[in-house]
Amino acid sequence: MSASYQVFARKYRPRTFNDVLGQDHVVQTLRNAITQDRIAQAYLFVGPRGTGKTSTARILAKALNCPGGPSADFDPDDPICKEIGEGNSLDVLEIDGASNNGVDHVRDLRETVQFAPSSGKYRIYYIDEVHMLTTAAFNALLKTLEEPPAHVKFIFATTEPQKILPTIISRCQRFDLRRIPTDIIADHLLHIAKAEGLQLNEAAAYSIAKGSEGGMRDAQSMLDQLVAFCGEKIGESDVLDIFGFNSAEAIAALGGMILRLDNSAALECIHGHAESGKDLSRLFADLIGHFRNVLVMKVDPKAQAGDVPAEVRESIRAQAALIDTHRILKLIDLLAETDARMKWAANKKLHFEIGVIKAIQAVSEPNLDDVIALVSSAASAASAASAASAASAAGQLPGGEDFSASRAAAAAVPPADRVVAAPIGGGGGRGAEKAVSGHDEEAGLVGGSLMDSFKNLEASRSAAPESGNSPASEPSAAVLPAPAVSPAVKLEGAALWEAARAALIDVRPLFETWLSAASFISHGEGTFVIGFSPQQRFFRESLNRYEKDIEEQISALAPAPIRLTIEVSADIESVAMVEIDDDLPEPAAEETPPLPPAEVSKTLEPDRTDAPGDDFKNDPLIKEALQTFEARIIKS
Image 1 (cartoon, one colour):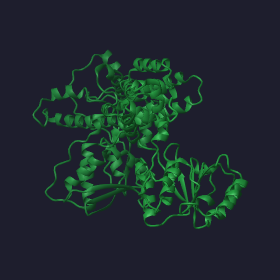
Image 2 (cartoon, helix red, strand yellow; image 1 turned 180 degrees about the vertical axis):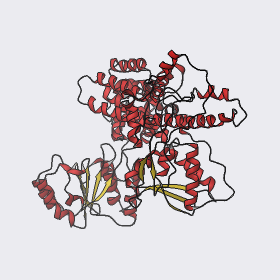
Image 3 (cartoon, helix red, strand yellow; image 1 turned 180 degrees about the horizontal axis):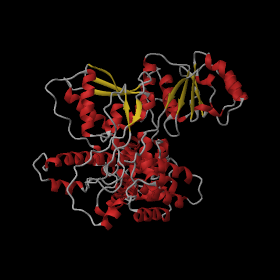
Image 4 (tube, helix red, strand yellow; image 1 turned 120 degrees about the vertical axis):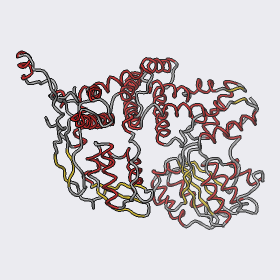
C-alpha cells in the first residue's frame, strides 16, 4: 500500500460550500450571513454521524479567515485555507469535547481567547462532541460564550443536542444537518467510482447508500471496503453478501407472498434468508418499510414510494391494487407489534414466521366494511323484493314480466327484516335504517339467515386465492350508483339538503341513520356544510368513504357545483334516537290446495330454525355491527 493512500472519506471531503451535499438550508444561510456581514459569535451544528458537521465547520472557518475575507467564495488551494482543511492552522483550534471536557480545560480556553489571531481575521474555536462537556465546564464557558472578544468565534458540533445546557444553546445559532437522501449519496458514490476508475453499477451504489442510513462518511467507508474485497468491479450481490443487506426486490417478493396469502412460499423465503445468515431483525424492519411504501402508493398514487429502484416501484404499485387501505393499516400495526417482540426474543425466526402468518390472516379475514356492504346489499334487495310482491296483486310486474319469474328470482334474495334505530328531531331524518334478521316470509320472498350470509362471505374470501381473485379488493357495494337526474328547479340551503338526503336514502337505505343524524349548517359561495355533534361523530366516520358520492348528489340538485364539508362541532345539537320496527309489507296471499291433517299438524308446530338464536346474537361480526349502529335485533 502506498504511503500516500487516503481513504475516500478524507480524499473526497468537501472543500467549499459548493461541495457540501444534501445540506442546502445550512449552506445558503451561512453564505448569506457572510455576504451580509451578519456573522454570529457562536454556531452549533447538530446532526447524525457522517452528515458533514466537521466539514461544514472547517469550510466556515476558511470563509472567515481566507485572504481578503470573510468571503463565501474563497480559493480552497490558498495556503491558509489548506492549513485549516488539514487541521494545522494556529488560528483555528479543533478541540475534542470527549477528552477535554473538564472545567480546567475550559479555564485554559478562557485564558487563550485574549490572544489575537496570528494571520487570519478571527481566532476560531471548534469543539466537537460538545455535549460531552461537564455541567461545570458549560457553566465556566457561559460568560465567555455570551460576550467573547471581537476576534473570537465559537463553532460547536454534536450528535446529541438534548445533553447540552439550554443556556448554551440559547447563545448559539443552531443548524440541524439532515440525513443525506439516498439518491444523492448514490450519485456521489458513482462520481467517486468514475474518478477512481472503478466499475460500480447503479444497483450496488443504491444498496450502499441505503445501508449508510443517510451518512456520507459511512457510504464512502463501505465503498473503500468493497474495493479491497472485490477489486475494480463491484456488483449489487457483493454489497448484499459483505454487509448483509436485503435487496429491495427480495423484500418486495416477500410482501407479494403475504398479499397473495401464500403461507408456504413466505415461510420458505424466511427460511432461506435465515440460512444465508441475514439479520432477521433488519429484514423484518425492511418488510415494514415496504408495506409503508405500499400504503403511500395506495393513498396517493402520485407520491414517491420511498427511495426504491424503478422496477421495485412498479411492483409496489401492483401490490397496492391487491389490498384496501383498512387492511394494510391493520397489517402494518400487526407487523409493528411483532417487531417489538422480536427485539428481545431469543428465537427471532419463530416470531418472524408467526408474524407473517398473522399478517396473511389479517389480509384474508372479513372486516366491518364487508359487513356494512353485505347488510346494505341485503336491505336493497329486500326493498326490490317488496316492490315485486306489491305488484303481484295485479298478477303482473310493472315492466310486464310474469310474476312467476319474479318469485323464482326473489327466492334467492338474502334475508332482510328491518331493525334498528333512526334519529328524529333536529337532524331531520325520514324513518329507520334497515338491517336484517332471519325468518321466512310466507310468500317465499326471503329465507335463510344473516349468519348464513356472513358465513358465505367468509367462505368466498377463503376460496378467493384459488380462483385468482384478489382477497383484499374493495367490495363493489361500496360504490354508489350515479346521482339522480337534476330537477328543473334548482334548490338551495336546507331544502337542497333535504332533497339530496332523500335521493341518497332511496339509493342506499342503509344511509338513513347516518344522513338523518346530520344537520344542515350553511350553503354559499360553492361550499355546502353539514355537521354532527361530538356525541355522534361516529356517523361522520361512517360516511368518510362516501363523501364524494354525497357531494355529487348535492351538486346535481344545486344551482352550481359545490364542495362538501362535513364538520363535527360542539355547537351542533345531538339528534335523539328512537327505535322503529318497520316490518316488511305482507305479500299477497295465494290460493293453495288444502293440506292433509298430518301436514297441517306439522305446519302448526313452531318453526325455530330461522329465528335468530344465541349463536346469531353472539357472532362477533353481528355484535360489532350492532354496536357501531347503536341497534338491537327485533323479532318479527
